Image 1: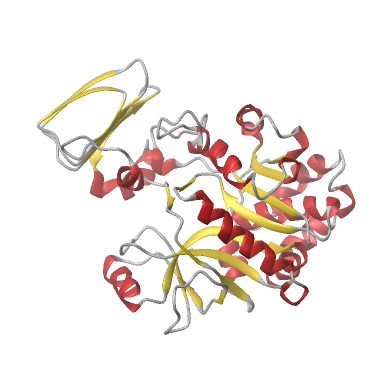
Image 2: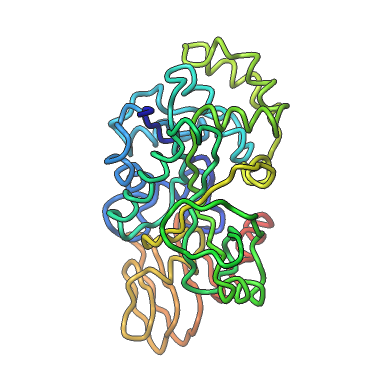
Length: 353
């Protein structure tokens, strides 16, 4: 059986979670639910029963290396791969893949974001192990898999995976028909009613051979670039090569660059309590609520307020009155007050600021 590796992508800044998530301390390092563990810590522990600690790689911005090691002290320094700038998920995954190739050319690889929520870890482990076993089989070494989530509602914030019409949503390996961008509400309702669409969780499983072949086929400019430093990956010269050449990588996601173009694409319909906690709205769905459906964090008093999020950092006191369906968040001398239904504008507002 092929040796398993796990790539944790942790280079984003989570701007949709402003002001909690900022450049100097982004979302993956936050304990948003008050569990005592950050998103990245929880992600690492979730995969640890499936992948040995020495086979984890975290790809992050160079500025966050020390913070990653603080949250994941089990890792060696050379397990934290540092991007000198952000270039989206395809270069991130290619970088880690070349690093793994220098260590274990027969690897099976799981790629995961650093900041998702999973509530049923037993089922999660079963599904991921099933995917790893599938891509490790010789006849499936060129298969590319992304985990699909059985939709519980018409969600407009996720991309969708299209299965062949009439497909059941049993938890078994099934070939993918196509991908759909984040839909408007009417299309999301149609997807859910059709019964053969899944949410795209952004968790990928493939063999090293399979992803290398796909990158060479669909993103040759990326592999041509990294091939120049092939002898330096896995050596002390690797970081110097990356610092010199990474800026030349195309800024493209693995979904656009590879998954939408490839042929042998598979998924496993899954239901393990997954959520991409990428927005305040998704946090609100999963957070504990008071008797008036408010999600409160910090030293907060609310009066005549319902269906709202109030989140303030330690040492801050807040009194909120007369709100319905609103968001109030304060951290590090930054304040956000808006309607929850308008949270899609937060990233745009932050850019203006």
